[in-house]
Length: 468
Image 1: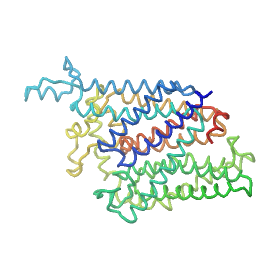
Image 2 (image 1 turned 180 degrees about the vertical axis):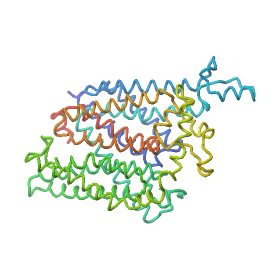
Image 3 (image 1 turned 90 degrees about the vertical axis):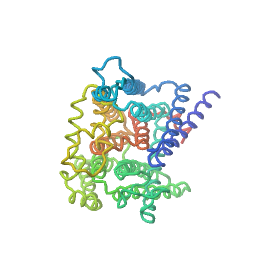
Image 4 (image 1 turned 30 degrees about the vertical axis):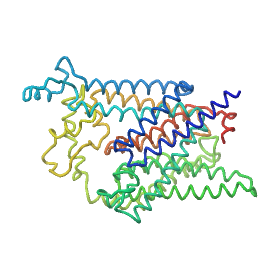
């Protein structure tokens, strides 16, 4: 019995350390610089190893755990293979043949920059390891909800910090001088697009927490002292929700705001219908009444977009799609992919490879070290393995969420939250590179591990009561 209690306490300690590591990875500019990224990688890998040794594979999400581990091995293994010297040249990048003819180079590999590709292995591994560790630690609904709650609150606090910094010190980014996006709120990130993806996800998380706390308050017996505490927490959560939403609007990211509203259109109307219901997909009552509330929720989201996304809409009107450099370079990226669709050019080599395919009509301004499209850059870097892996990931998520919708009742809104957030991030990834920023990638991986655990899990009342 004491051994069981010790394991529970140890799991709780590791869960707190896990949440803390995820939040710490966000704060220093999304860990885009080497030192915080290395610290985050060491800490997360240590947590993963300890959790795996102590608890073994998760019981309810074992098949997702196995597929994720398989993908991690395949992607990191292929990335390593791209860097090694090949005994034959037919798979090597043509640039090595030119280097041999011009400078007598003897090395030949798939990647045009083996050192950068080798360094990119950690960029792949860290989000995967974060997700796997989350599955190991979120063995109950209560622990998964704790992860989502702490992530939502951290997003709210970061949004408040971003608002204060943007209003009082617009030329400062945390503690350094801000050189770009001076007209946009970026919170703890370097660019507004990553900030928008993060704040959009934070808005959905805080909306969920507001729903949870208000339902708890409405069910609490009147006159008891705890009711006042819940009322105070409700107001704090509502203020954090408003902070996330306001900060999102001030980011002025067109794609980020649009993707968030698409996610909100999926999530908010359903949440309105089921705000006070925990047992049925539709609240008891006439079906037309539920449908009316559902439509009202959708209209409310559209009205919010029209009222508060004015700056982003103005940017979209002033700078049309055909004038956006991100779309001008797409044909060049496609040509590069078609030339190297089988093996790729090596992960982390976009900046080097794309320079040969850039259309002069796109102008001489701007250096594109990223494709502004997560899917195309992954395809160019890894070759055919990337789209196959992407299809497998989305297929697994579809199956997980479908099962969650079919089998969960009281916590079904968390399944809808996972669907809405996945749509948000997947849409924005088509025009920006938020998923390539380590801090956000870790944050989203931790979020996904918790919603997957809930979607595939079952409540454990005896266990949950001990940790409330």
